[in-house]
Length: 454
Image (cartoon, rainbow, N blue to C red; front, side):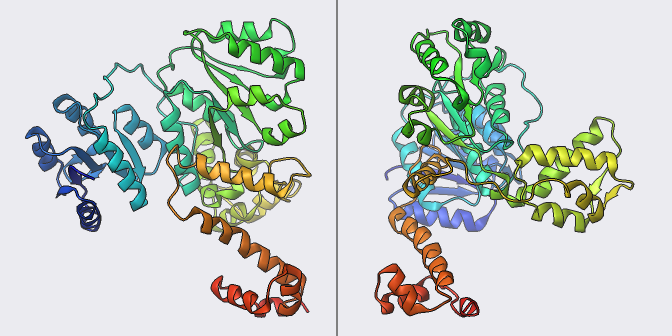
């Protein structure tokens, strides 16, 4: 890399790490813990790229972006922030930041983004536009890495023209994400229209939906439910879109790849809808968000006039341990019921048990066909892994990481099946016993626990 990078962060360790890494890469670096100093450097014409934190001792890094844009419209700014919320990502995108990364960030990833920023520093920055009023709050809650990755991807696709396919289990929040993409995009003042399979069964259904959307956003809800005839009509509609067409989005709780292989979903429709795929994690895949979501729903009920309620420590542990097969929707309904049925401000474990007692507790199967092939399941997870990186390639070493992810459970399950007998396990796997022993050591597999099964 060749160029000068201005680094602004109040964390000395981060300044040191970035300075050393960028210097080794061939860059000149000016680092500071002050936005005032950063703005002075910018006004003096220093730097080809800026890397700035948001919360600084003397101000907010996002609030500096418009001023940087006025003084140096060709200067890319990469925002890094420990405030890992979708609001931060949206604010960074709307403030015309070149890129946004949540902390803790992956250093090689940041270096790649910085290299691209240096290459594009001579290009004109997007012109500022007057933004219409937007909602105060987003209907999305979560701080786990899975949700942070989702927020970043949503922020990236928000104002593109690409169609968006949002996949995930029932109740995971697919429609909410589609609405958030619309509400925080440049189309927010235009209609947001949702249609389902019933709306598209008539010949005029697609044309009517298109007329209602009028350049806004058109969401096909559970597109996997469309009949063959409706799919054909939607394909013809998408092929006839004009310049003033609405943004196309679709949701699906089924694996459309498997549906295509089974001849139940048109391949041409899949590729027309899947410009960008957003995989919404199930609630069991982001367990740390469950207490946060529960508190959010309890607070929401209070704002609607219900009495104030909060989970006791024991109740929160129970809520966190439950599998929530109905995902966020089921959690919200449970919290609404607890607000009504609980007698005291602090909801007890017994009250949670009462509400969850007649609800399903077995985790649902992973989204996909019941007879899904292993290769299809692996491909689905790999696609999701790539999608969560928001158009940026994952860190190097992917081949070994994937092999490790498959090898570890394979050996553990084989050991369980053979009662911990390594000779039988090696024979089952078709590998040398010494090879198995080495892998057990390398993967830190606890064999003694499995021998108790004999």
